[in-house]
Image 1: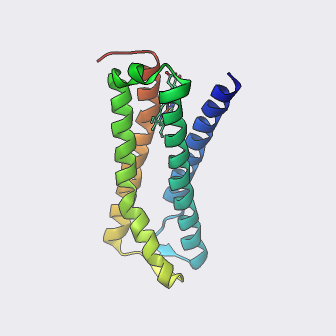
Image 2: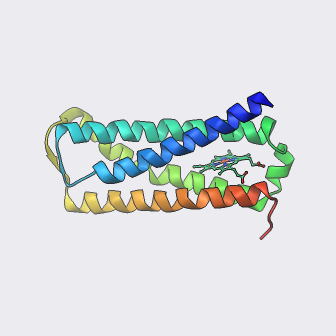
Length: 147
Ligand code: HEM
């Protein structure tokens, strides 16, 4: 019981950090980026990736060992909605991460091109929409809802 509670706590902790990191990235990513701001965005992006990993590992632990059993989730349509949204979040975050990694060689004051700025912000917002819908899918999944 204690381990189950700890896994659930870590699942939520991961979600909180994920939300914080994405909100932070949305605020810190600007067209004019100082070296400090560039570093901050990169650190936030690292937290985004690490917390997504924590959410995934604890989510899988719930599916296989600490939830209602893998068979319950495999046959639950909202589990697959959750997984699809989570995968979408991951895929949407790839181009921004690659963009921030390119800064590594040239950390310093940077002006982000208008097209890149608009594209990355759009991807952030799409990630936020997917992230906002996942708890709904999780709540429906936990209650065995059907389409
Ligand atoms: C950002 C991503 C995620 C968020 C925001 C999230 C959120 C939640 C929330 C709010 C609950 C509690 C639902 C309730 O009891 O009403 C929950 C439970 C759960 N989550 Fe996640 N989750 C995420 C990712 C995942 C992933 C990727 C998996 C699986 C690989 C997963 C598997 C589970 C399982 C199995 C439960 C337990 C459901 C039950 O009580 O039967 N979650 N999650």
